[in-house]
Amino acid sequence: MPALTDDQVLIRPVITEKNTDLMEHDQYTFEVDRTANKIQVREAVERLFNVRVKAVNTMNVKGSRRSRAIRRGRGRVYGQERAWKKAVVTLFPGQRIDVFEQV
Image (tube, rainbow, N blue to C red; front, side):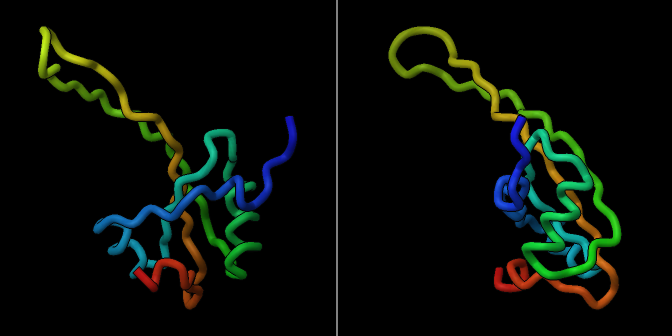
C-alpha cells in the first residue's frame, strides 16, 4: 500500500458552530482519510500549516440512514450517507491555523 501524502491525509476542514467554539481552545477539526492514523495526521498538519501539534483525537463518523418517498409509484427509496473519519487537532497555546480564521 503506497504511503499517503499530506494532501491525501487531510481532506477538508470541518466548519460547524461547535468546531468554531473549539477554535478558542486551539482545537481544529478536519475530515481525514479513513486509513490515516494519528501520527500521519499530526505530521500532515505540522507540515502543511507550519504549527506544533499537541494532540490528535480521531473518530469514525457513521453515515446516517436516509429515506424519501417516490413521487410516482409506490414505496420509498432507502440509502445511507457515507461514513467518514474526523480528527480533532489540538495545538500548543499561541499557535493558529489561518485557513479557519478566514471563515
